[in-house]
Image 1 (tube, rainbow, N blue to C red):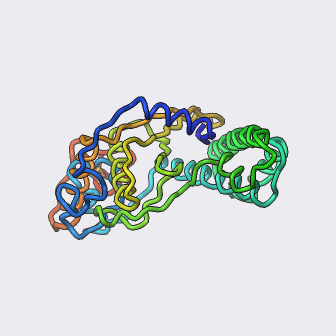
Image 2: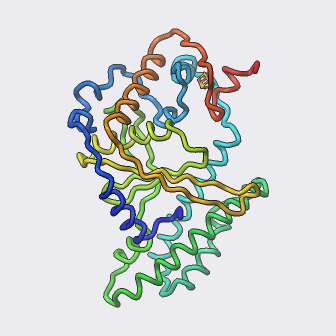
Image 3: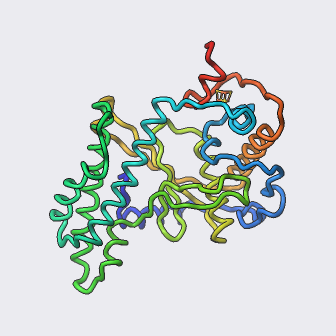
Length: 300
Ligand code: SF4
């Protein structure tokens, strides 16, 4: 992990089957035309802003009304790097499988490791960031080479497309359109395992705000594809201090009515503050990763 194998997909499917989840029909994404899902403001909220949990909604006021400049804190910059490397590793693995057609895990592994300097530019990155890049890339090399070894022993009649889908079962940065639910047009899911398992990676500590945002993604997915989604996955990655290694914690979530309503409330709060010209003020506590800390808390 975090690179899911086909066995991981089957394991998660089984776990989900053992986690029943009831969802009211009016809270399915395809009911976006009716309350409570119907957006009541024209403004489109950045989906990722929901994960900052600004309790007064000042974040939306600053972004959409004031158009204040944001400053990406260190922790978010690291998270962005991790996301990019996972997506690049996924794309590279598929490219090698399709174009070079490696016949064994070791053949794949060597090619994949050789590709790293061509795919990820580490110039200017600090040593610990480079360590993280190497750790993620090595993990992908191990996961996908072992998956290839397993798949090629299944049958000599397997065709390339089928092999690739078994070795790399997910699509990274899968785009969905959030506009019908009041979110931005180009939401990118960190990973989608067809037909409908949504996975998000996190490098920050677990919090409810991530779950609320994930519920928003699920609703947009339901809205677009008309497929019911009752569960989704948050993969928390915890790096060692020198970032040479990491642990992954898998949280399979029920996207139930309560979580869906929390998303609706957060979306409506942000949309109302983005639309009104009135500064809603600063909450007691701010998210330590909020990109507007320098604007709101410069004196702290
Ligand atoms: S710094 Fe605080 S008040 Fe300002 S946008 Fe972020 S969470 Fe909201």
